[in-house]
Amino acid sequence: MTTELGIAVVNGVFRGSVYALVALGIVLIYRASGVFNFAQAEFGTTGLFAAYIGIELWQWPYWLGLLFGLAAAVAMGLATERLVINPLRNSSRVTLLVGTAGVALAAIGIQFWQSNEQPIRSMPKLVEGVAFQPFGAAITYQHLITFVVLIVVALALAVFFRSPSGLAIQAAQQEGTAAELVGISVRRVSMMTWGIAALLGGLAGVLSGPNLTFTAGFLTFGAGAALLPGFMAAVLGGMKSMPGALFGGLLVGVIEQFGNLSILSDVSGGGAMMLFLFLLVVLLLRPQGLFVRKAVAA
Amino acid sequence: MALLEVSDLVVGYDAFPVLHGINFTVEEGELCVLLGLNGAGKTTTVSSVAGLVKTRSGSVVFDGKDLGRRSPSARVAGGISLSPEGRRVFPRLSVKQNLRLGAWTRRRQSKAVQRQLDLVYDYFPRLGEREGQLAGTLSGGEQQMLAVGRALMSRPKLLLIDEASLGLSPTVARTVWEVTSRIKQDGTTVLMVEQNAGALPFADRALIMEKGTLVYTGVGDELRAVNLREAYLGA
Ligand SMILES: Nc1ncnc2c1ncn2[C@@H]1O[C@H](COP(=O)(O)OP(=O)(O)O)[C@@H](O)[C@H]1O
Ligand SMILES: [Mg+2]
Image 1 (cartoon, helix red, strand yellow):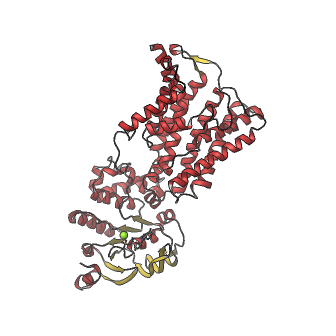
Image 2 (spheres, rainbow over the protein chains, first blue to last red):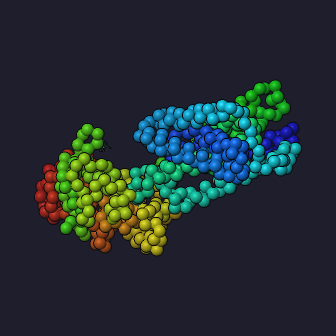
Image 3 (cartoon, rainbow over the protein chains, first blue to last red):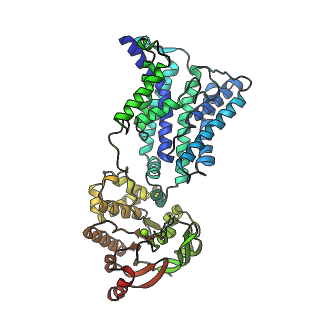
């Protein structure tokens, strides 16, 4: 039983890294534009598809394909900001929400069209093989790299948000008018935020894609679905907290793995059930989220 | 030549004109107060000078240049700074971070920014004492000081202050006005918006606004004597 729990925790932490990356992007955008970004996971699938095209179809070196994938994700994020978010900035949040869902659907449509010839795809891992086996859980190099990238990205974000540009982003999020008045371009800040969030999504995509075979909509509803777990992670973390999103992501990964415990072996969809139960209990007991001390007065 | 010259300014939100073609000037080196009841159009006036609201017609000439449709950002860089109604400090940033962001357009001149920060702390010692505190946790008076201090950080030629006294105790309001008067003596031209006639003794000149038009312009002394106060300010 202990070994089994150990395996679940280890597996969960590493698989949760992808959720944490997605959740960080969701929180960033929620703080900036006040909207649940339904397209967050599609930044990932789009990045993954672009990387696949570079590496598999055009035979580029792996690193170049990855860069291409990340660039495609960022381009999609910037385009979303320019073409959907900015024109709708005075509309209701529901309209914005529908707008981001539209972006996701459009991206998935393009992916289906693009992958018509070969709908099920796969690409090699960054490094093949198993890195280590705590409790007998096989942690691949790919999982290890994903986890390390997550930590590095989280630290980089923490440093960035204390830099002048990061402070300007925070200022624009907290008091848009006042930010405009001191000369911060709220428009540039919005672009920057969507670009960073899309980069996080892209990383989730290019790092998780090689774990499995993938199809259009891979990170939204496919085998590598990370959108719903990412949302849950963000909500657990209080929607506005970056550390909350990080730990929320890892926690969601772990709880999902608990569904694989042998005592639940008769229950199909045990992982998803555990997750929803846990989320429900947390929201009842701590509606402000797990990692937020108290609701801070706005 | 006046530092600020507003001519035939018409501003409206949606269909309704709020300012019906107002004319006034602010001379270099003076402290001017714009008085009027709630809804008279004072905030709309200073917001259009700062570039936050679009003008329908008329012109705003600052330092000899027509500002046209210039962005708020370009106006701060050009020397106009507004401490907005309702303070609007960045609540989850510290006092010092708020102030440093006030110097956003000059952020690369770190020495000059530091000097300006020291000057603001000299005007408002409370801010210096609380420089590490989150702005959202300051008292109303301290937040108002922070809003004025932040506006000063860009070293404006013209400082606009919208209703500093709103919601403050008479003593704290006096403190803010006294500092404003010092800021003027140190060479910054100030246009402050007030509903509270208590600001009059600090001003060199007063403009009185009613329902989107200016109904009186004169020196403060004159106004104190006349019964205009009763007529227009209900005080
Ligand atoms: N954003 C806005 N949209 C529509 N009407 C507005 C807006 N801001 C102000 N008004 C209207 O313009 C008029 C003048 O308002 P304002 O400039 O805020 O006056 P004051 O600052 O003197 O109280 C008021 O009738 C107010 O209702
Ligand atoms: Mg007002």
